[in-house]
Image (cartoon, rainbow, N blue to C red; front, side, top):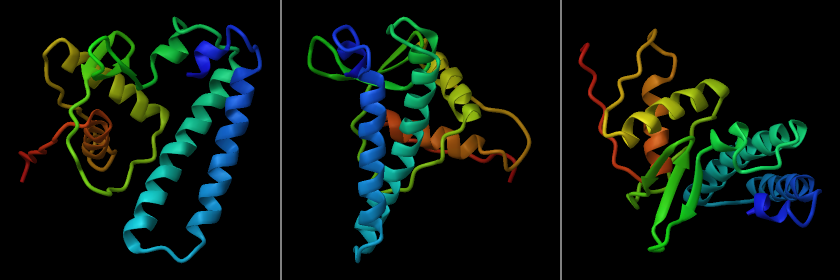
Length: 164
C-alpha cells in the first residue's frame, strides 16, 4: 500500500518505517505479558515476520526505491488481490495463487538474504510449472526455507528425505 502513497507523499516510506517500528514495539511489550502458549507462539511469529518487514522497509528507504518496477521491490514476496478478488502472491515475474492451506499457529523462519534468493528461485520455478530441489550442504536451511515459503504461499508442503 505504501508504494501507492508515495505518489502523493514522498515521505511515505519513512512514515511506514516509523509505523512498523511502533508496531514492533507494541508486540515486544505484548510478549512480556502473561500469554497462553498459543498466543505467545502467534506473537513470536508476528514479531519474526515484522522484523523482516522492518529490514526490507529500511533497505527500500535507504536505496530510495520509489517505483513498483524497481527490482528491490519486485524481489519481495508481495500479496495482492486479482480482478476476481483472489489473493495472488507475486515475486519478481512469478504470480502464484494463494492456497489458503491452514497450518495452525506455527513458528516462522528468520528470513535472510539467502532465504530471499532461495524463495525467488523456487517461486520462479513453480510459476512456470517446474519443481524445486534446493541443493547444498546439510544443515544450511534448505528444507526449512522451502517449508516456510510454502506457509507464505498457503500451500501444503511435504518433504521427502531420500538420503535416509
